[in-house]
Image (cartoon, rainbow, N blue to C red; front, side, top):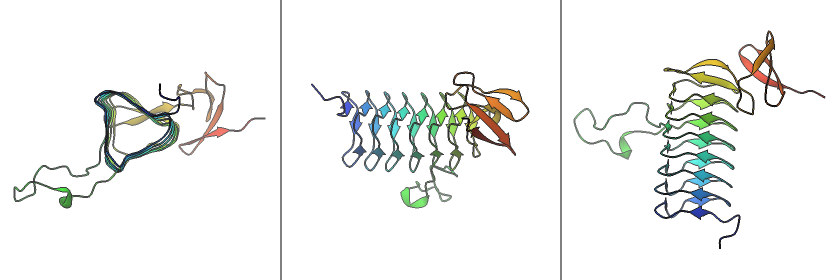
Length: 203
């Protein structure tokens, strides 16, 4: 029997040689982790998910079924990527060059998406490189992100726009007074100044 901290790779999952994997990781059926990808401890890669060459994934992340994470994406600790979400890497996608010849790796330079600590991307959302999703930010299901997202922001729509703020628990924050917010799940307090939300330290 495998130890509690040994990686679990289900049958039909593919982990290519040269991928760096952390203790406690789980890869489910038909997932693919490419060579040079680096996954931290206790990560879960859902069925059919794709982690590209050289992608960096921190500790305690979840990449759900059929999600596509293209290089050179960076996922910090505690990131959630929902089912069928896509993190792109091509600013000007084309299959062929202007002369009709097939484009190769030498004909374009990939750019990556960055997801900061605790960020979440909902099901079937698309994050277009080089967007940065700030710490604990949340992208609603089906949204298309084309610009950076502030920390703790909740964005939705096509293109995605901020529709509120969320706390570390992922719940929408309640505005108790102008510029002052409270998490209904944890009672954590936050303050907004100039479109930036920060936790308020209470004693």
